[in-house]
Image (cartoon, rainbow, N blue to C red):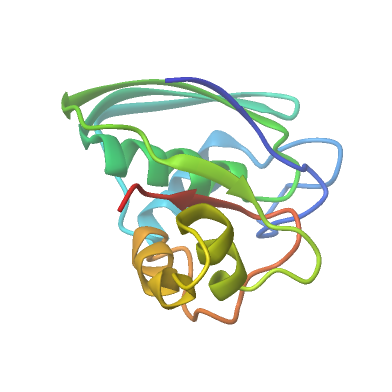
Length: 147
């Protein structure tokens, strides 16, 4: 799936992380477990602000959520996704939240005017990392699935 870029000075603050470097692989594993995200043979390596993830994910959606959960943490600027996928599907578009964005506005931008109500699709696609549709922040990267 490739290398994904993130803003390393925003995101979930994990123990041992700072703006210069990501948390340890163990702390990142705990973050994935908190969101109930896993893959067979999951392996994480951390090199400064870059995280490499490998293993066998059940689906493309699961692989994308793993990448987002890792990347949306303080100190991570890149996630090198080397996950294999058991059930491949079309990849979602990734969107970086801008100041003033709402899920409604993001839905209209990605799905067209008059489709703001489709924000629920985006919210559901980013669970469990999102706990409420109003709790997004600038710099956060979201999955935008095709309709």
